Image (cartoon, rainbow over all chains, first blue to last red; front, top):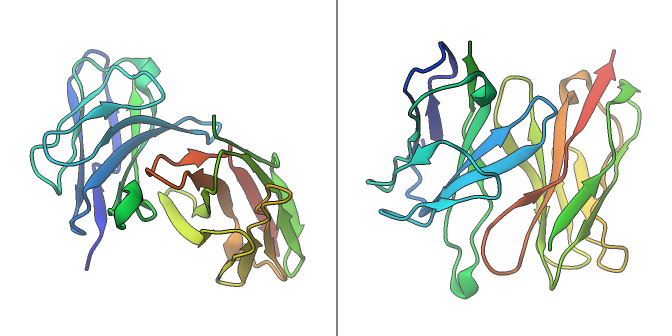
Length: 117
Length: 112
């Protein structure tokens, strides 16, 4: 079954630790995204990728970094976690739908809720 | 730039009540419009979409019509259930590229 996975679902960690949030999709989608969702529910795009070896920063500045070595895998890393990084992180992917640079709708993973103490 | 404005919540309804969640947008050209739903503790799921003016998207009893003249995409359901309690996001993507612009989300609470 084609799907998009995120691990861990919940993570509580101390300040200064390095963490990696995993995101994998089995749909063969070219484009992948990371969103940060604040407690007020608003979604902010922090990173996206058009494909392997492509990474771009989104609308919201983030101290996190991403990599795209394989099509199906788009991990997000925080080198030194801080309490201000506490949030819900959502990964998504979409497929190129054809000519004109149009992509199909985005499919979202279940999210990782990160708490930094 | 592109923007999406949706009514602030929470919206609290009794079971079987009629639901409307307003959504208006600002965009150049002819964007595609979406409604996503987020159930507690989960990611977003696409609820319905419309890709051109006057299209009606529908799914699970929900529907929304793409109104270019009023730049609106209001979500409606004739009879809500407790299981519809969730956060609903209106979103758009321009006719080229796929950078979703989300509204701020509307929390719906349905009481038995």
